Image 1 (cartoon, rainbow, N blue to C red):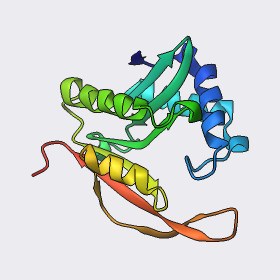
Image 2 (image 1 turned 120 degrees about the vertical axis):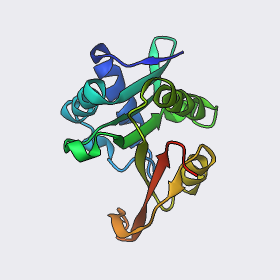
Image 3 (image 1 turned 90 degrees about the vertical axis):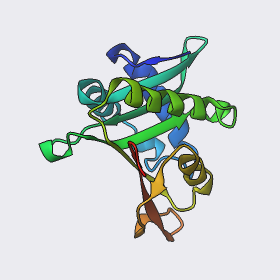
Image 4 (image 1 turned 30 degrees about the horizontal axis):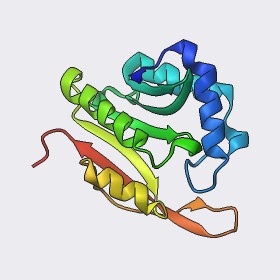
Length: 167
């Protein structure tokens, strides 16, 4: 079941993020960087002026997606800092597509002021980049040597965007 997140979901969302961060190559943060404050910040900002949805199965949160507006009013039409996580045991089963589709439907049906959604994907995550392109995002550039991998190598971050009514 996909539903809007609430503040009472904070602990379950934090647990989900810790599970996902323990797997290399997914989200940028490592497991020891997932703090209660980090999760609370994202959840609060998303509830305040953005969107946060969770997928729940058997009283556990197995996926979460959030994005929120940046502070300057010139960006009031933009949702940024988009992050999606799916529990490692549930990846590859369509939950990511389902929650992301619900997120975009929420924007299209209930948030007419949102004209743009931004996200960043690491260049080695081709599967995610292809998925984002299939649901309407496009690549806007490349941030060379932005990610420092644990093995001492570097890779680029790929900024992507979805734009309402893009021609």
